[in-house]
Amino acid sequence: MRVLIVTDAWHPQINGVVRTLTAVAEAAVPLGVSCRFLTPAQFRTVGLPSYPDVRLALATPARVARLIADADADSIHIATEGPLGIMARRHCLKRKLPFTTSFHTRFPDYISARWPIPESWAWNWLRRFHAPARAVMAATPGLMSELRSRGFGNVALWSRGVDTGLFRPRQVDPGLPRPIFLSVGRVAVEKNLDAFLSLDLPGTKVVVGDGPARAELEACYPQAVFMGVMGGERLAEVYAVADVFVFPSRTDTFGLVLLEALASGLPVAAFPAPGPRDVIGDAPVGILDHDLRVACLAALRISPKACRDFAAALTWANSAQAFVGNLVRLREEAGRELAGGPRSAVRPAA
Image (cartoon, rainbow, N blue to C red):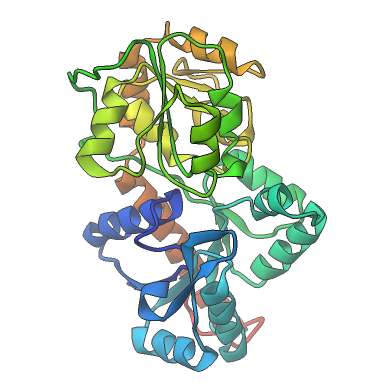
């Protein structure tokens, strides 16, 4: 199977969408699936207003159409709702090409945190964007239920994974006062880092990542250690030296960093928001509490082995199987529709 994945989120961005797409594409190869990408790297780009590190493609409909045709894909997956996603969606509808989408980001929450725009407007737009897809893939059963309650149809599960070879317990000297409370991710208003950095906690608070709110937060919290963007072995070592992973976000749909922390033997402290609630649930690997300080201190008593064991079952191979399985199922359904009298003139592709 040849799959074309259209995404507005791409390297050099470091975020959960980019990590998910690249990891799943690699893990899909042994399944006989070749993933090709249509990304901003193929176009001139411009920085997103108020967020210049996020690059938007200056694409034209004609070039997007040509790249989709050149890919000669059996299945088309539109991963994001940005300029490339919009143009790819428009092309597929015009040519009656079936496609799937995925829901990665709670844009209504992000938009309302920056501008006085009602969340209902953003949700209405997102619902219309995803409505023509043969399936809207969501990371957790909880997110699936929320999307259905908001009027999204054809929602399918696409689980996430973690590289347990890279993210693992290690013996590393941190050179910082313990306990070490760590947060990893984009340093932006929607990540709610104030809720973590303002806590009265012993030891050291460490933040890994960058973003538009970093300068302000560094000025407000000079005792915290801001380490900037990290990846690979350096990031894995930082996870391994910490004592508790703090996840203050209330808006994430999943949070791959949660799995990276758990695979490193690091217990989680978070609010009982949808993302961490879906990932952790009732497993004894984290503390979810409306009082984040209580969660941080209680998480110090959690077994690192329990965290590692929990993450071990969540592999990228399983994630790739879920993604590919959705595509195969939809192709088979489309084939049956054509054989029995199609409801619309489409070729049998997901």
